[in-house]
Image (cartoon, one colour):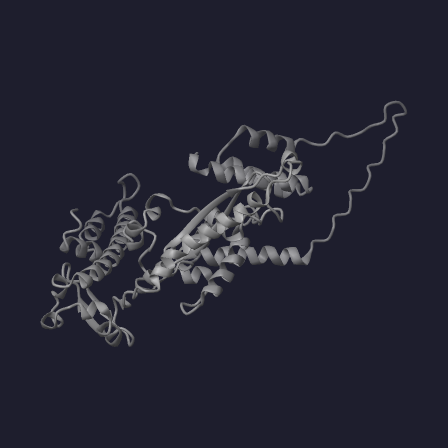
Length: 401
């Protein structure tokens, strides 16, 4: 019995209680047994015993005449709208879980050319359909996490650009340039539930915010997710408080205005900074000019017209512009190539992890049961296979095992 299943067991028990309250005993028994199978608790065992306890029968006290049992109440016919909604939730959860963890566009059901508004609309719909508190579908919690991760990447312009350049690379990983430039990506990872509350402003459950509870607000910009916290309380003492001065009444508005101005200063500064040129690790019609980084000799491709009119290219001395070692004489080019190499190395590390997991899985299939019946020749053959991503990291001196 794994401690990691405890939260899911509690969720199933709460669902069982809701079904019991609505009279659906069969569904209540199903989710109660599922809760016990995941993580047995005294509450779940007691609740199961109450569900299975037969109802007492009434009999005549003196005359001995048997009372007729009243007919069971007529069950309302199922609402076709609810059935349709449930089928949509099931189909949505299955579709999302069939995607790979980093197939963010496929998870959101969007094309790579979609707009920011398309991404917001898709997240709004999928987050509601997969939210564990609103869906009894098995696997909804996992699908909800995948939708949250996709929104975290695609909803941020800088992370989306990095992901488009290397789809196999996770921009939120510790190897990400964003993680190096913004410490919150390393130690303050945003949970799917926080993302949900930030997006919907805390108004999803019950149609309004409750006094005293935390309220989330968020802004999504080129520097990633920024969280603001506020707390509202409505008490009788506050309602009956004497009228304050006009200055104190407008003071919160002034503070909010000042904070907004200060928060927009980085964005205003970015208007005067030329963004880095685009690049790709595979040649295409857009990115057809091949270049190689100065340190690790990583090949990458840029748009010839864009790159040769960029201040980075203009900072390279004329005599070194055709050399692969140009980054050693141009600090601007070296800084740009550092970012290219970080993305490339992060992609290799992800690929190496997948190769190691695949090799271990295939070796385990041929080891037999506690060593009996194992195909050891096949195990040795798999063990000797070369893993391209891991080997490339070794060649670069970034992997020691």
